[in-house]
Length: 241
Image (cartoon, rainbow, N blue to C red):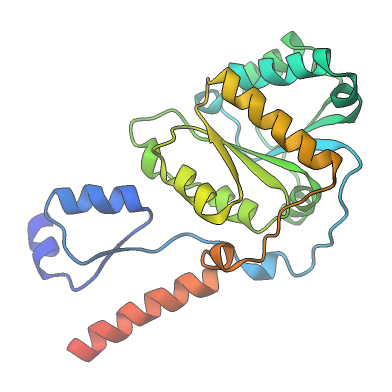
């Protein structure tokens, strides 16, 4: 049945380039990637009120499978090593978080810098995201992580903060961050690289250098543009009928 679909379908859509290649490796043809994307309507009512603090932000489920000991150790070390960093730091975590994250905050002297909040309205989360300087994007540790594109990635792209991805350099997230110039990717336990990137972003914060989220590279991932691409494939199929 699967091979019959592969052989007869005029278009097959999938959510990421890695998974596209996976399908092609087992015989699929005419495979196209349609990204989840971000909805511009979600951002029209937001204002840009940059925090005076160096806000490191995460929203959503922060489970054990996304936990990075290296991240919290790096931030804790920077707090001890640099008084300016210690004075500016604020960590904002919204949503469900695993106990391992709470423990890591305490063990690395970050509990007083962290604002841990449960589930709050989506509109409030988006505004907090828009005001933050550094947006955390830890990928879950799994065998298919290279092709996983969290919906949060696309919302982050539309915000002016920089993105710190934690996961494999071979992942599609890493490629998108590079293509959009939106941030950096470090292996989830690469402490040297994570610490270096946090320092790099902190230096950008000190000169108030936010990212421009309204570029052609970012706009490609809007729901409007992804829908337009899907519509063009449907038009092609109709014309061939």
